[in-house]
Length: 78
Image 1 (cartoon, one colour):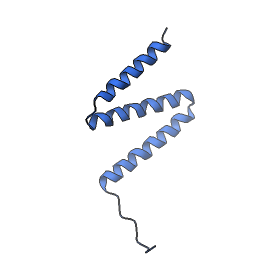
Image 2 (cartoon, helix red, strand yellow):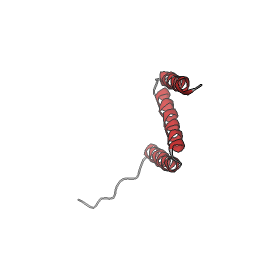
Image 3 (cartoon, helix red, strand yellow):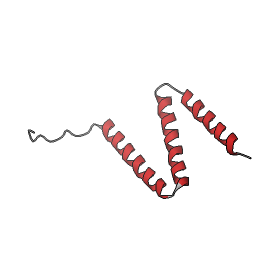
Image 4 (cartoon, helix red, strand yellow):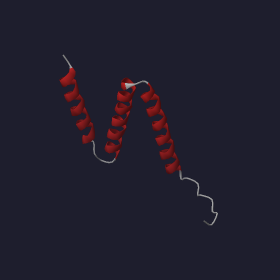
């Protein structure tokens, strides 16, 4: 090693780091709530993934998520 200090994060890297840290902390808190919390954490993650996909030019991810949720509700609704 040359003893060099790591370079500072770019603003984009800092935002991503903060986003991931926040998501991990939230997931930990949700897991402590048991199955309901875990389901809530997955719901949060699914919305985040769909929003990211939409930002990347794939708005159909929302349709896929909606179809999955419709199927789930149809399966478990009375």
